[in-house]
Every structure is written in structure tokens, then in C-alpha cells.
Length: 369
Image (cartoon, rainbow, N blue to C red; front, side):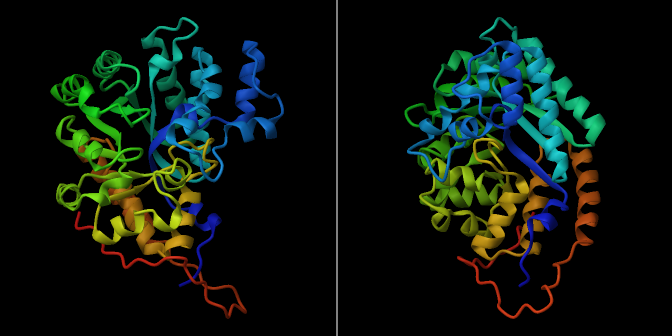
């Protein structure tokens, strides 16, 4: 099997369904916004600031990973900053040919300087729309409730989702520290979402076991699962997720950083894919993890021996799992599928005699839908 390169993978059309706005800023933008807003940062040196934000190879826990958001959120308390960060995220996605982006964040975390919730949502939507006009990347907003704050605050975010339905907001999510903050406590917020026919997903099975995933599905009605790393610990639930084609928003590098998986070798992604689950490839936090969708795909190729056709399957799963209306999704899928057919595995460089050996292998079964 020929080795795929990052440059080649960047050319493929892709999705990013699990991408946090406040975790995907540019370091240069953080520094510029801080200067303009007269905000004191831990360091004004770009390299040092990046080291403070970047999660490294691993953290001690998800809670430690989340501390870096204090820095990014400090400069995201104005409409101008929210517009800019959303716009730049679209530009960054365009550079690696991400065609469809779902951006998630929690508006209640951007009210420290007096902004009201509606202008916060509108600023991000306008930034994304401006980015779409300039770069051609389609996008939508997912608003997040936060497990560790309160069920009442999650309900407020759900109400905001309903108010902005068909105006740029496409879904609801439950994010934040998972341990000791069960999804079922936020059932009222999800019920409002479902009653209004709004899409929803939930972080689950990242810092807690399969019970968290079960609650997200059965108590909250989640249409997708964010991470789902520990799903393999419950075979019955795994089969339920597979049978009902509930997509998993896999964020490989982030999962290793937060120790949702101890290391890359033990990450369940190759098993999930080989078993036939609907696996999608995502970044989680482009800054904290220093990644792109293309980099995540390269890791999957290098670590697990999965080839171009396998990655194409995952890309198609991403478009199938998008929170888009059915007819629009069908049109996009038809176009992307045809485009992907034109990509073939590049030949080995001249003079290559040594075959690349994958760290792990997985015999992949193509999903049935």
C-alpha cells in the first residue's frame, strides 16, 4: 500500500462535525485581540503562549485539557472578536478543503463583558456566512449546554437554539466535564430541542464509561455521539449504536491528549470502523490539539494501516452524518462521492523498495449505510 501524504489528503473534500470555536483560534489572533482589548495574557510571546495552550502529547485529565480555554475565552467577549474568530476558522478549513463545517460553542461563556446572548449568536453566524461567501465552505452552528454549570443554563441554551432554528443554528450539544455531571440531569433541555425538531448531539464516553453514552441516547435522544471512545466496553450498546447508525464524532488526537484513550495503539477507532460503525473524523480543538482534519486522517493512515478507500468511507460518513436537510444532504453526497472517485492512491516514489509497515492493522468492513 502506497503511503499517503498530508499534501494529498488536504486535497480531499472533507467535513469537520466536531469543532469547538473557542478551541480553534490562531495564536496570532489571540495576541492581536488581547492587545486591542487591553487584556493581560500569561505571555505575549507567540511560542510561549502556544505552549501554554497546546495540550501536548497528553494531559492528566479532561479537566486539565479544558483549562486552556480560559485563555481563548478571555479574548472572545466582543462581537468583533466572535465574528473574526468564526470567519478565520472558515478560512483555515478552506485551506485543507473542508467543505462542510459544524462549529460548536456555548454563548453563555461569552457574556463576561456584558454581551447579550442573541448578539453573541448573531456575530458568529455572520462570521461564518462571510467566510462561506469568501471561501465556499458551508457551515452551521451547534450551541452547547455545559454539564458542570447547571441544567437551567442548558435549558437557556436550548431555548436559544429553538429561537435561531433555520437562522444559522443547526443543533444542540452537551459539552464540558463529564465525570460526576450526568447527561440525564439535562434532559429538560434536550426535550425542548426534540419537541422543536432540532438536531442534537452530546459529548459522551470521553471521560466516563458507556453509561454516559446510554444516557445521551436514551435519556437525551442524541442523534450523534461526541467521541464515544468507551463504547466498546458495552457490547449491547455498541450493537444498538451500530444498528441505528448513530454516528460517532471521533477526535483521535484529542482523545489521547485527554486520556480518553491511553495511547494511539489502544484507541478503538480501527475496531469501530472494522465493525461497521459510522465513524467520522474531526478535530475537536484545532489549536489545543494543533491539528486539522487532514492531519487526523494522516495519523489514521499511518497508525492503523487504513488506506485511501477506508478514508473515503469515513469522509462519506461525515457527509451522511451532517445536520443538513435530507435533500440537500443527498445533493452534497452525490457531488462529493463523484469527486472522491477521481482520487486514486498515488504511486510509490521512484526507487522505493521498502514497504511501509503500519503500527496497527484493521480489516475494515464498509458501513451498510
